[in-house]
Image 1 (tube, rainbow, N blue to C red):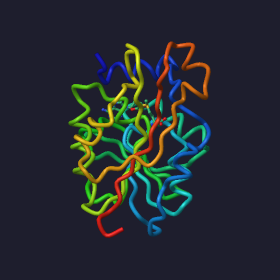
Image 2 (cartoon, rainbow, N blue to C red):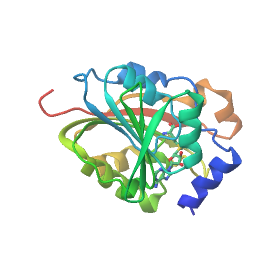
Image 3 (cartoon, helix red, strand yellow):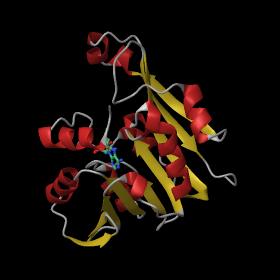
Image 4 (cartoon, rainbow, N blue to C red):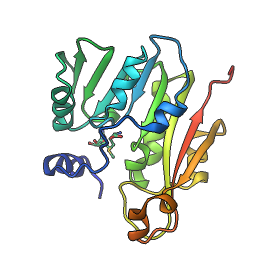
Length: 215
Ligand SMILES: C[S@@+](CC[C@H](N)C(=O)[O-])C[C@H]1O[C@@H](n2cnc3c(N)ncnc32)[C@H](O)[C@@H]1O
């Protein structure tokens, strides 16, 4: 069972193989150019430096993360100074020198709305089947009707247990709606030996985007 405790334990044990220090190349390649000051939501953000890249582009970035360890490491590793205030059971950490906030708490308790864009890397695929559709609905409810979404999905063969979970293309379309489009994909099993060693012939990482209707 993938519970909140599961994730808190992963952070305590340092089992965070999902974390990459480098900025995700797919973010740099596929992120749309938005107006400066656009509000960008990063659900289940971990301690991803992708948030710093987004903030440096001039967006107002809000990451949401359950684990206080992840938050402390993110703020500490980057030598950020910040202010903290409480809203209900969420702690909001506002970084001083960048337009960046980290909301510490359960994403399903986070109810702000009107974000202009969302960046999902290793968030939807971190959700078990039983919660994934709720995660997508909760995310959609946070976004303005004309919001962009950039999502990195995974689809693999075999009987590996997640996270990350394998999510079929059709399931992504069913949850996110007709406007989501697959804009790139790479079978990592062809290019990275470690996926073959784990028995995969297919380990497809795909990039999906929702563009606003007027684009
Ligand atoms: C696979 S990691 C991905 C982190 C980040 N997106 C990245 O690319 O490195 C999933 C993260 O979601 C967090 N998480 C899981 N369930 C959550 C929830 N209900 N609310 C907030 N964060 C959650 C975990 O603690 C973990 O840091």
